[in-house]
Image (cartoon, rainbow, N blue to C red; front, side):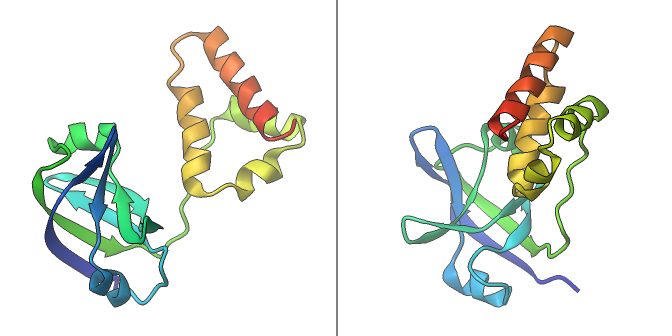
Length: 147
């Protein structure tokens, strides 16, 4: 059974970046090291992330998309639930991107990226509105991976 912790905090904001400061005792309760994969619940919105150490504090990022979905902003006091999620993170790769990665010989490099990196590349491709944009973005991913 996964460890679940709920606490109240104020969302930290520095410039455009917003994060959840996680108390050290919460991190320790997961017994999973300092970079803990978690499922985050803010109001009725849930997403996967990882606790990271930044500036000597344990933080979980809250992207603009997650803030909008949860209806929160930097400086808001919120109740946060973190659930340790030890399952490997998977990312569904669209066929055209998968084919391009394999053809260029960089699929292994793509698969070695952290889940967030793979997800970012996939999102850039899938959010393209025009076929030409999608093709350019696929080429850019391949190029960035050394293809």
